[in-house]
Length: 578
Image 1 (cartoon, rainbow, N blue to C red):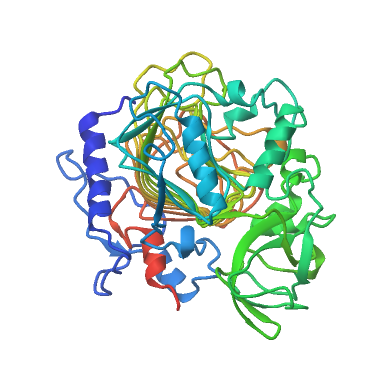
Image 2: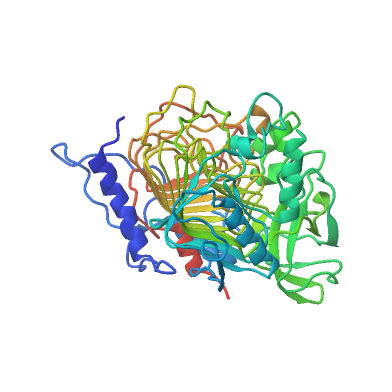
């Protein structure tokens, strides 16, 4: 169905209005408003063939259930602390330590390559302990990619409408071909790396060296050293939703320390079954031949320690999964993370070239966070890129007021390799400015590779879709979004299921009536679909990966933006304990 600009604009205006009125939290609807009935609502039309009558806002029954069990609800995940610094409304503004133009000579007129000057400013700011590197108004030509490898370093322009970076080369030209570790002629720049790339220095150096040596590295926290962790302590058994756990030895733990929860799967794949919600369907699933999926375990979940009292340790966020003895639960340390760094107030524009055939992207990519924690992008636009914003083994990061626009992107947003607890809010995927060349592919707000507890909130998607690339991501939320659902998902069969348990889509307006990847009740186990548009199946149609009862819930079907709370993430934040 062709997109009606008037219809899309109306739906998008509703989302924009919600962005404007949203303060730090969303007030819950007074209890005098009735509760919506569960199950699909009939589409129905008013007498005389007009549109259905407006429905009074009502509190979702699933929300009332969630309030009673916020950390352990079977269908709705707890995501109230997603984002940098537990979802802080105000992101840090480190003091300015240098001006990349005035001090280092970055040319704001675009006549000379500014990348060496900007990279030198970023590196020296990091070596002095961090701070903000300013890019005054102007247009800066960059013939290399920009690297933020020190914690506490922020690259800040004068605003996305005033500071522009013009990127002239791709990552293939700058670093070299990046083949897939799974073989074939695929380019891993189709889902990795950025022309602004935030990752720890040592981890980044080893990654680039491996790419140049054609070693095709793993991109997660520990790279190719998948078993090389430093064990800090073992965990005693704990349950999903626990924030305070008991450890065997608290000696190496202290408030503020960032640790990794490590869970190893067993021979029966009971950890993967647990991620899928358990039960007969997950138990009957054939896991052993899903080689790509199996490469994602052990499961690694970064989290900060908040308090240590004897052997009792309180974590920044509740456990995403049970910690059972058969999974050898440990708190470990791995690669030194990048923390407290960000990019703000600029536009990154790649040289406009036709979009490449699927999986052959040369790497004209936007901003990517890798092995990063408590990092952010704010007021950043990327244009004419192969892939927009990346979260690769990145956790607790915030992307706020970001936008992907221009000739069309393969992945406008990608979230992969065990990326957890991230927040993407007030985002836009703009309609493409050039027709898609034959053989190209459009995905969308992607999540894959056992990534969990990520949130996409208050978005307008004039193109693309709610993409998962298999790899069984679980417990992710998309809420208060308007989408022209015209993209398709990818994912190799060896990556396993499309969805694990506790995916939730809450208040989603679909402007072209397509069900795929938005309506979850027929494909995702232990999921919730609440307040979405009336939709139908066409184009790519998926079947459930798990047999039997999916234990999925549907409420307020056909009635987007009528269910309360309007934004699931903001409502969960209103319930936050101290």
